[in-house]
Length: 161
Image (cartoon, rainbow, N blue to C red; front, side):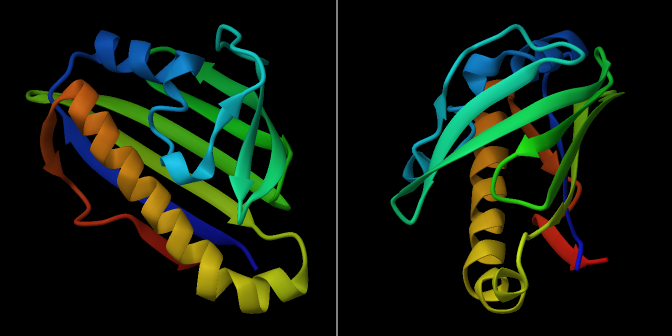
């Protein structure tokens, strides 16, 4: 079963400043809740075909995660794809659309958990609520760094595809 997580909000920032914030790997720990203990293994310059290696801790267990930048269109869009990690699929598209008041930031994540027991039991009880919490935290920190304008979506949304 595939799921889609989406979020859309406007920040009071220029397209250049917004892109600069999202295209710096060192900002990833900032936009990740502290309880995940996000650690970058390396801090490469993000561009097309960059591989990002990091670890998170989930329920105290360290999980290695590697993503690959598969689309890079400054300052409009980029996509990261998990090539190793906790999901069967994690495809995260980030888009940035200039507005009269700043930049519209849109996230769309298509994901699938790896094993049936995870999909049936752990997902609704733990994984989905944690993903919502992670992306709510992310929205808050992005707004603090780039300037909040307004939510386009009232809240982060998850739906089954």
